[in-house]
Length: 98
Image (tube, rainbow, N blue to C red; front, top):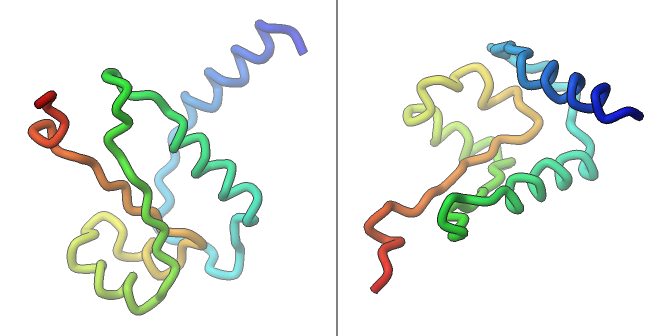
């Protein structure tokens, strides 16, 4: 594939905007695809090279239900998404050289 074609495909993917309000609970992201997605997030660099994030995958329905009051933007998505990922980040004060 030519470089220009690859670049255009990447730009098209970034230009696509779609807010999913509710998922089809019967459809699941494959384990292999989901592991790939998590790995790309894990390997994403930060500006200081500290990668101050952790990913927590919440699959347990009871825990998801407990998160609902705190996930105001994901009320319908929490119970229907095949995977729910919490992204935890350290605070700047926790990353200071000391």
